[in-house]
Length: 265
Image (cartoon, rainbow, N blue to C red; front, side, top):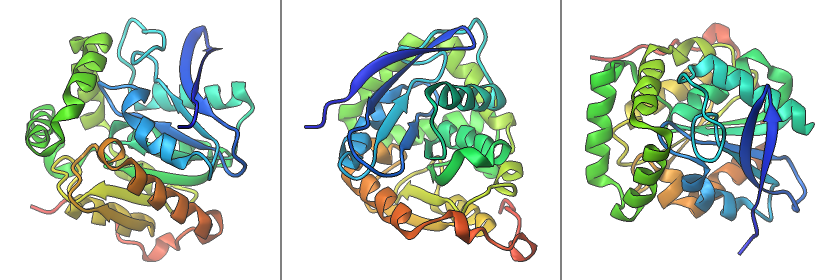
């Protein structure tokens, strides 16, 4: 079992926690969690990546063990903080691998600061335009609970309580107000678009639109739902490592022939 160490790094006055295992050579992979949760649910994928890549799993401010700002941050503030955290640690370029709301954050950071990015993974990216409302996204989360592995529930509940219900709901609002399409049009590299076969939050149709809009590579994990990086850590890690072995920076698509993301009825 690989050993992940904890540390706290002060960035812009906030103590930011991460778990890391950087003994392996290769491109560092930074796994970025979604809303309501923390680094903990990404550890199955992180552990499976060790031996192939250095791995870092931060807690975004407001979540997990990191400091809690008095307001819930939007995508821009999280992306700026993540970039500043990488600068403080002297990291970059790296592979940014974001799940759910974390995919929105890494897409914004990649678009704003392309020099930090050598690889990009958008796993279960939110928010599908068909459900781009607070009620629509919450309904999809509730449906996802019906197809997720029940063993995750206590961990997710603890993380959500630690963050605070008000912060979780406010972050849902930030997510649905963010147009990830605008950042997809500015990505410096082709992404891996990863998701579960059963995911109702970022369904296959939406992920196919993201893949088409970015010239990316799509991987769908059978029998997995939204939390694919928790329940299918080995398969997610294999997909990420295989994708990175292909190389991504030299293969930016010709955006003059890429169709925009268009929601379907």
